[in-house]
Length: 488
Picture 1 (cartoon, rainbow, N blue to C red):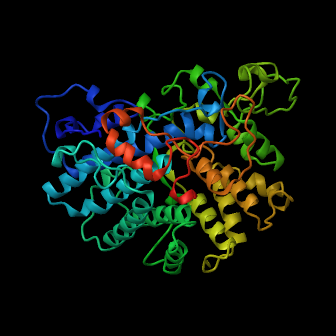
Picture 2: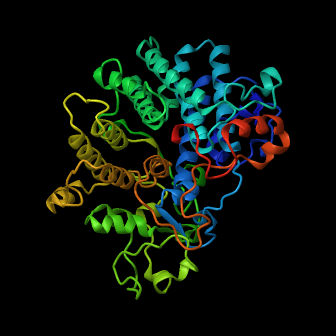
Picture 3: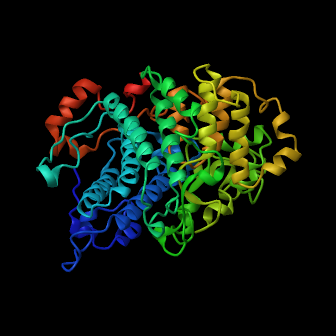
């Protein structure tokens, strides 16, 4: 399990400058560095590294392919879904920084930082168990304090139950705050306690819906949240979104597809998928023009103005006659910084769709809102974010048969999937949970179905073999197709 000594935290900027995909041990150690870092600096580093790494994976890595938003036309291994073991060092490195944050809160006696550390801990552990299933949790990150370097794996059921409890308690702590944190070091909400509470409770809604199939109290807890807005505030507008803006000055603080963050050829490798392009075209959706660039030349297989690339085909870079005849992502996604580009953890649109799904299923009632209203709220919120709502309304977008609310899960999740374009791994996670949208994978895909999980890192078998073997004896085979607890 990764362990980061305090001396590596002497310069919080290290996280901003190199946390994405690098081994912490690769950094040179400053022998004159401080042994104790104020919580405010660690909080900033934890937030930035969590948000930027999460967003980078949503654009650059497997969640983009598994969500069927991106088709790689070079180095297309991700799109074939024969992934093999996946390293989790990045997530556990962020959690190790966050553990140091807890320790510094105690050392400096600054308990006002505690609920923020709890929320970020929950976000990262939730992402880890969402990807892998059962993972080291209660005994993780104890190598420094207790000399435990081979932690056991916890069951996802136990992890998720504890995570939602942590969020409930963090909200209560935030509500009772007597002292604010450093505004300048809170890069997420500038010490706005109400917005942090909204994020905390909205994240809890995400987790409760995800576990609802096998957690009997899920909808009861969701109902309690929506019944009491004063006690459990949630996102109410795009201004509440949990997002970290990009500065756009260096590779590490630029949007991952920007010119500073990656050379143009990296941007050119990531084409909009046929699935997302066709879904937008079917609905005459103005987000198509916001997200996808028209082709430079019309092709023969698909003579349209906007052409996405199918999944797992032979020579995808030659599809439709070659590079000029398939679409790039819109120029927006090749910028270093833009108001519409942010490292996104969660959005108001997602919350609308979460509540719409639960209400549509008859599991909760939302005061003043029906499932239909929440469905439209989710679409409008996402369109408003990208500046195309007025265009959509002028074209009678919501009156189309394909868009007009019909009460089906396929329609609701289809619109949520569109709204989650390049927003974390939610498109993939919703598909594996609901089966929607229905995707038909390409002829070169390793399986006819999308993976259900990441396989454990291969070094776990070497360095933590006994715990690994105990885990899979309970969890099931370490395969991409094995269902984790909340999917069974």
